[in-house]
Image 1 (tube, helix red, strand yellow):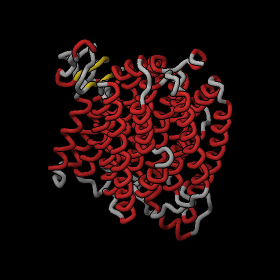
Image 2 (image 1 turned 30 degrees about the horizontal axis):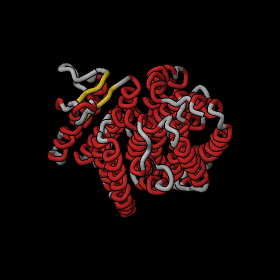
Image 3 (image 1 turned 90 degrees about the vertical axis):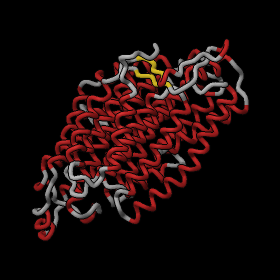
Length: 491
């Protein structure tokens, strides 16, 4: 399907970009708060502007001689990508609503948020690999900017390290794209896929694959870049970290899908699959071990994010249709319940500390918030009937059906570790007895109704997708079946 005049799909990317530029000019205006709230409402409906199919931006779908290759910027929208973009925009909307309750809100924050949403949406929908790279770089800069907006020395250091490593990772990703272009003669992902399926591999193709994996590791927070990402999450303000981890999860999913589409099913992908699974396991195990050692709640959540990213990558790396469904579904679920946890941490931070040893006894002062945070924690552990249970069950099932029982066992063990540190954190923050001085301080805590509203919406989604997972799974499965690998037929 090609471009139609009534297809407003580009608005999903173009509109937030334009508004981002506008907010950067009016960042000191008194109407920024009102416009931010208005943008939050618009973002929710924006994913429904486009119709399903392939859109060639600016009529650049041209045939190149007898090869019938296409060139130019291309987007693809289907039910699976639509649900990912909607989840991204919904979380972005809720974070912007939460931000309107902050005294220091300015247009620069809103501008960076919108630029990040536009960039990650473009990465999800991109069908040409160079366009994907451009927005990958913009998303990197945007995330660093959001961390810098936290205004602390440690935040500046974390953002600088992230940009420094990103300069190298982004350059290697671009090199990989150049190698694949030299080997295939195209930047269109579908055409590149057809070329690779019908031609022998060359050193340029192997090099391109390696560079894509490096870009995947950096953008998605997999080893060896996991510590850089964890530092970013822990140094940013908690409600900002909820957006950063959402960006990372969808960049991870998008790049894994590109690798699967280009190389899945090819003989040399067997080794690639093993490497991707190993990186995924590294993220799961490292994140869990480090989270168990933390006393700072933000750092605990940061390392937990790395661990859950490993789950997402593992499901996609399995490569079967069920594995891809499980990986994407878990990525969506994780973006939802982890945003809830970071928003909860933002509310808890009103107690003037993120050190769990200095907290305790908060339950009587914010019982509703405590209940919603507990729901998000149970979701990430994988307790029914919450959404994390459904996606983790699919992941374990996919690993068993792909004849990788070791991976399923590791997932279960990591979930046990998650249970330990999540319940420990809940006890230390809400249930542990506290002093009379702390009680007097807690009485003065002012909880933003905007943050509570956003947290409530995310909690409802955790329950809804736990009871009705098919709302999302049914939209993902046809897409996963199209790019999934039947390993039994490839042996």
